[in-house]
Length: 329
Image (cartoon, rainbow, N blue to C red; front, side, top):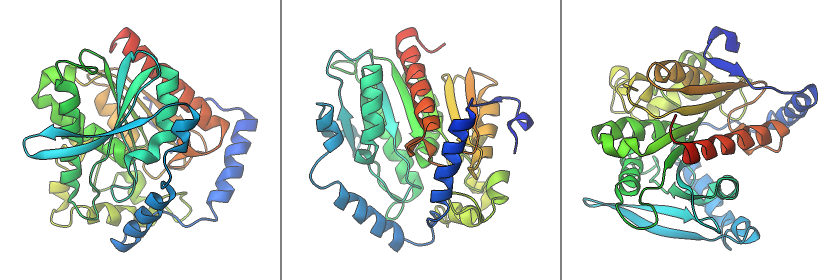
């Protein structure tokens, strides 16, 4: 789909050299297996390997002379672990980070590289939610974890988090959980008002599959396109499609009145591109939304060693700075 079909999206500027670099990296990605959710065993194996690779401590934090605090937060019988990284000097704001991983793999520590960049570029505290995973918990439980962490952070009336502006950041499945969290916060407008912005990278906003998901072919990168719609339904096996399309489970069908400003990115080769473009169309009816369609880029591209990824991250950091320094407008 060309971005012109969705007038809300602008094409991210790339030079011929940058485009060639992305395409060369894509050829390497094409040799790798595509990520897909088919059972519980594979995600558990990947999660075990991820944790084994993290043994020995967060080297990226030591390199930047930073440290992380793990803390249990929440209330009402639910305790959720969060990972807190603080800047060296006074904090100007807070980023509430929700990691990706298809709901079935990942943890807060795996985002250290990205979050250190945010801390250093924006002088903010990053609070990353270590939510439960869908291999053992229904996806609604993951949503509950993220909402619990958000309410704890936004309701604090004293201490280091009080009165600091908050930006919510979510990537992939984390984008879904971030959008669902914001919709759930509409029940407490005073807390929602503290959120100055939402930065969403290629999220999943319809658990029945948007048109680009249902039409995804075998040449999709990183994600296994043909199996995506069925994989999404595996998250909620007890529901039918009509029930899956209820917000906030599928944020695309929510009411975005009074939402904070948003910045969204999605790649040209991402089967989820309609999720971002359709969500932006709904969101922009009541708030400022900036959405960028990134040429030749697959799902997960901000993690890849390309100049395009670097430029998107630098722009994202500038946007976070504008939100925490100048308010939500």
